[in-house]
Image 1: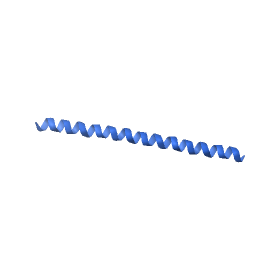
Image 2: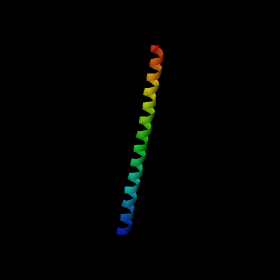
Image 3: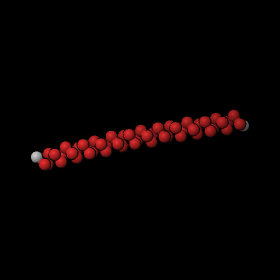
Image 4: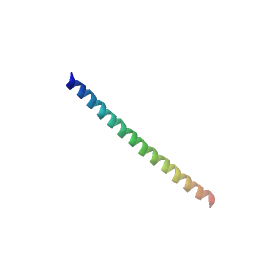
Length: 50
């Protein structure tokens, strides 16, 4: 019983790690997308300025 409980808790921990990595990856992706939007806005604003 104890061994299986340890396995279950270990699986939970590994699952949390995986989900945390996913969240981090999504954050990085979102930052890239927002950075692209900002740079695109800058470019379009400069075009309008000229």
